Length: 121
Image (cartoon, rainbow, N blue to C red; front, side):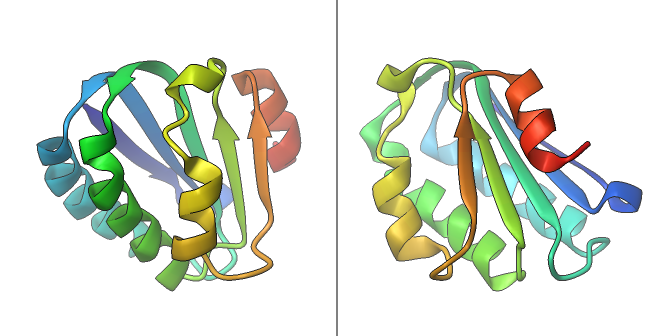
């Protein structure tokens, strides 16, 4: 499951991966993401939290790339990822090269506390 929320006053978009994530979860997640992006200005910050992720297979890579394209086209200013277990990273650095604008700052943290610091919250 994907949980998407935003805090417009902090210019923050938050995506939390929960449990087992399947390609069909991205259809709902992308619609929710588009709705949340409408309230954010260019340069917003994006927090991707994989601390609740149990499993996401390689069949999700295309859908994940599509979500990353949407974020990149929305003029994100900073991406901060929480990936506490590197075995659950299905190639985020490679996907970043193909789906985010060049020179976009991307920070990966092992926990949410580090992510909050990286976001300056």
